[in-house]
Image (cartoon, rainbow, N blue to C red):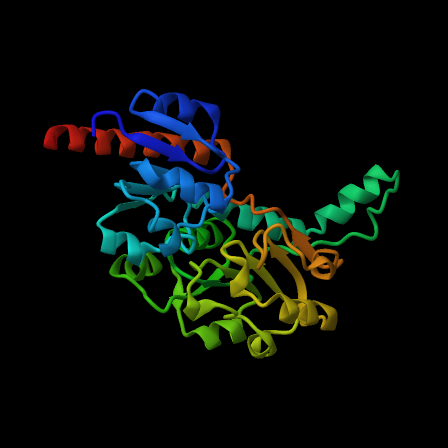
Length: 313
């Protein structure tokens, strides 16, 4: 494989396409349909994607020459990793958005706790509501982090060291690294239901699997503190949207922030329109810095694949 055929099927910045062309024959189709992708992938050696492209067993049946799949995402629920392994196709998961997502958590938290959107909107309408607006500080509040992987750990660091918050965390599959990190950062590792009952703020940072689909539903909201704040910047289907809407309506949840949705773009218009919901269009990981780092990693991986195959041939 001297000049690999590289297929890029999600939006990427121009520079990466130019750099990839020095390693192989690049086809860039950022809006390709699933049907067209099945026809295009037949002779491709490398597939580069984000979360829009679904790499299913059905798609892989059409990939007769595929050597590697590279996804520039933290989550991998859009990729059938088991099928890739079975077919001997290498899989690379580039997760360079850790700090970007963690910072977004606190951007949203501060906006909710200080009611920044109302303050900005009122000023633009020519109003001066200084006497009516009273915020709340994050310092001293308890934040429960569900999922203690790279992003969860970064959120914990900022919360503990930056805002002097009490940090609780739960992960069903704690690694030795995660336990060490928790100890070093004063994070209390507890059970899932204990976290729900004791957190003033809950932030979700899990990969989407069957096990966590609708993890937070009506029963879980009932266990939470009255007036809790909820953030989900991982995958939409982890928090049941109907249950969240009801919790917002009842005031069980004071405010919630969602960057991800069960369907994207979201179709649950009543939830998006709720006065106590802050919604953003899945942008938590999108920063200039994370994009530059992602591009560098992709180029390094493609160069490695080409060099390894040249050595074999």
